[in-house]
Length: 283
Image 1 (cartoon, rainbow, N blue to C red):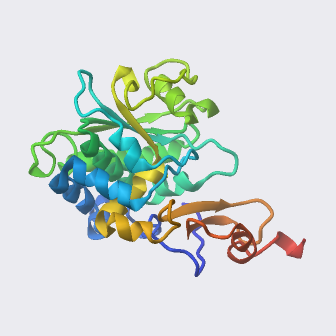
Image 2: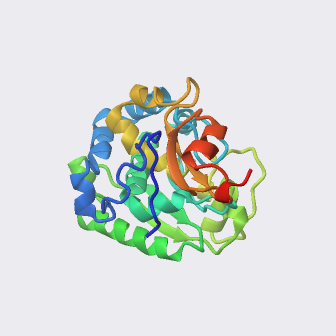
């Protein structure tokens, strides 16, 4: 288990279950787990996308594209199956925030994939985790198996008549598959190299079907947005970039770690107050 840090300025939304044993599905249920997906089934695709747009959640993988808008681009009707992909190939140097989500709150990722699937009327989801995260793959495998055992995945989820399957997939240690189209190539069993765009994944994605692909942190945030409401989540951040995110502080700082802070948080303040400044009293 990773050592968890904290600071008074943190606003714990994504990380609120960290260190609380939420890898266990029964504990996750005690902590309001899988309530968000039941709400999503009740309000339907249009309601989900409206909440996501109201939240001003932008992709936490780097590109920062508005999540609700991204989901709305997927055509309502499709001759081919639709897919939801979770990009957990966290390969950028110094980046270690998705690791904590998989380690402490894997069911939040599963629930986020489920909600995204309902939003675009998909019946298949994939959670792709980088090859070096072998121990996290074991945690995710168990979480998915436990969700199936409870009847939360598979046929007729929560008695809704909706069928949904989610699969895990481990990478082979290629940095390049962090790019969304390269990840799809890898999932299809090919060399993980980026595709030429257009077409974009929302129209032609995995195996040629319409596809939503989001970062693990983005999808793990979705259940919290569904429960607290998009508008309330948006108010935590800046006018065009709602909510919080996990910031990785590493290197020559006094208190390295992953901190959940509001979007728009001052970078100098993050280094000198949250991170305790330069290590060993250096300038």
